[in-house]
Amino acid sequence: MNVNRSRPAISVRNLEVTFTRSSRPVRAVNGVSLDVQAGEAVALLGESGSGKSVTLRSLMRLHDPRTTRLAGTIAIEGDDLLAMTRAELNKLRGGRVAMIFQEPLLALDPVYTVGQQIGEAIRVHRPMSRSEARAEALKLLQAVRIPSPERRLDAYPHEMSGGMRQRAMIAMSLAGGPSVLLADEPTTALDATVQIQVLILLRELQRELGLSIVFVTHDIAAAVEIADRVAVMYGGAIVEEGPVRDLIRSARHPYTIALLNSRSEGGMVRGQRLATIGGSPPDLSQLAPGCSFAPRCAYARQVCSERMPPPTEVSSGHHVRCVLVDPALQAAPMPAGS
Ligand code: SF4
Image 1: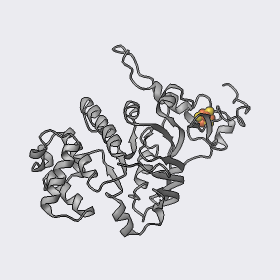
Image 2 (image 1 turned 90 degrees about the vertical axis):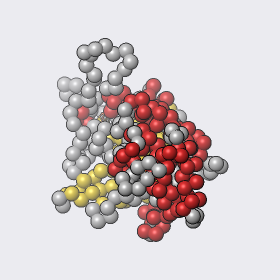
Image 3 (image 1 turned 135 degrees about the vertical axis):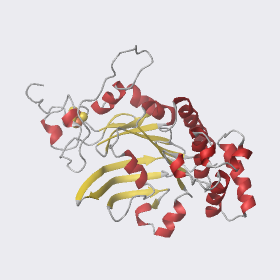
Image 4 (image 1 turned 60 degrees about the horizontal axis):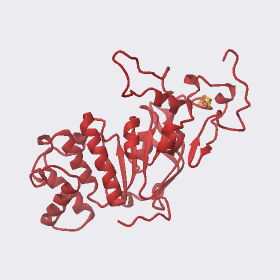
């Protein structure tokens, strides 16, 4: 596939997503800006409630418009997503932009065979007969390296293992010939050995088909396996973003450093305690001004609670939002007793 690198596949500017829950606004995403280039894989990394899945679903406008306010801009290959009509959105979803969900058993229909479901997904976007769609579905099952693909065409989802179901769902996501693939924790429900196989498959498909991938995960190892770049989210904002190796080796935001320190390492011994991040993620219905990590941050100072620091580039393409790297704010006084 030829990859158009002249414009980003996805360009998000100042995205804000606010839900109304029990008449109260919940600010789930607060000023996210992100570019994903054609053929690039970007991981959104963070704890539950950090805003990564909400950001991902916004890229397809999947939230209920009656209870969700979207502000900012989202451009998919230059087209304004927030200005699209319902018909335009339906054409985009499953066509140019496809989504892989966390739990394939919930996403696949239990009463149709995998071949029927992939075939119908193909026919929604490409006019062809049922037998032609079945032949295309077989090609997609082969493309996702599913064992015995001819047999799987006539299998029901419950007759397949979790790993095979996830491969079938990836095949279905490719049915409309997407250029952008959104993946919401696609390996979380799988056991460890299958997880790595699915990650490798996604990476191979990305290279073979020139796909742009946005991948949501709380697993740093998964991000390293699949991503060219990582955006770390906290409190609905991107707090650190950069090339994956640079970010893992030279993380600068205290939250990213705490996340990296809390992963289990190969050299750990039995009984050794994992490092944890003290405190809780912020209540997004009561976000205070300033850096939302401040209540959990050992380096917090007065200025941190006054305004969110702007992104500072600390090395090529590596941006951090923290007073510790902001030349204009580093001179701010530390709180008493710190
Ligand atoms: Fe900690 Fe302040 Fe940096 Fe936020 S801005 S991470 S509170 S030092």
